[in-house]
Length: 351
Image 1: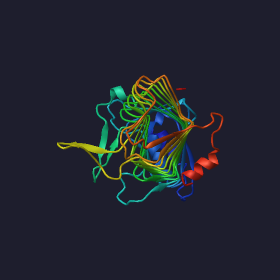
Image 2: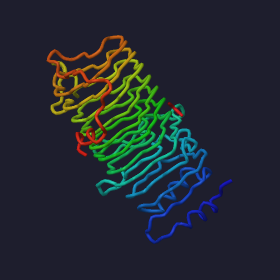
Image 3: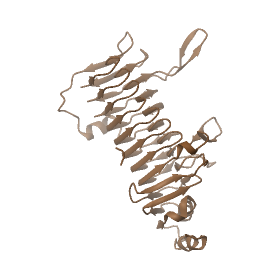
Image 4: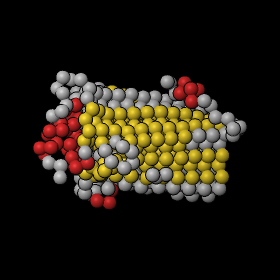
């Protein structure tokens, strides 16, 4: 048994000089041991986990610039305890009084299990101003130049990975999400970021949900299978989707809309929340229960589908408002723009 004395002895190896250090934390130390190592390591501190299951009873915070948490692959499991009702990992400092981004955080090579059937609620904590922290697998909150790589999120009570609160230049690479209560990947107020090699399947809501100022980002090499929706998007501008494949959604492959509310006089759209300037290169949508691509509002203008392939979708291919706000253009199937071109446009299975 990993006793408190042994844990304290391990943590005492961390120098107090302020220099970046690397500390290994064994599974028996659990989430408490991980957080102690991060806190004592300070800015730039790196925590390394081994194979095994770490029981998480409170969120793990990477809240100081340059911190990193690295496992040994999918056999490193962060498992949320019964009735913990909280996020598993938070990259950023949402509880800090002083505002401003946390920079260069890195999470990699591990699996997050949200144990959703033994959680009692979706919301962990409400914050001033109406924002909330939900019981997601990984929450990225007002973080610049961070990275999440080779991570799996499964069985979470809310979403798998969620970025929000003015997160910029986030890199998400080789990310898998399945059997989450809501979305595999959800992004709000996220800009100039790159999401690649995504395998998002069998989530109860969308594979990808984009809302509230998702602007100037790139999503490429994503495979979305067996979700309720493939991609749900509102208030999203000037993004590039390259080589995205959507299969077997229970409803639509892509659903694009403007935010609004129901009133007695009818539906009232919120100005400035339409989707505009988005480009889909080599989009493939097949065998979905709804439409391949549904454009709900004629205000969602200046969007382009280059080389789309829509096959065997129950309610048809591209369906849009009478003004045809989305342009469908032929694109040779063999051609896909180089990543450098995609990045320039954007400003910069289950194991």
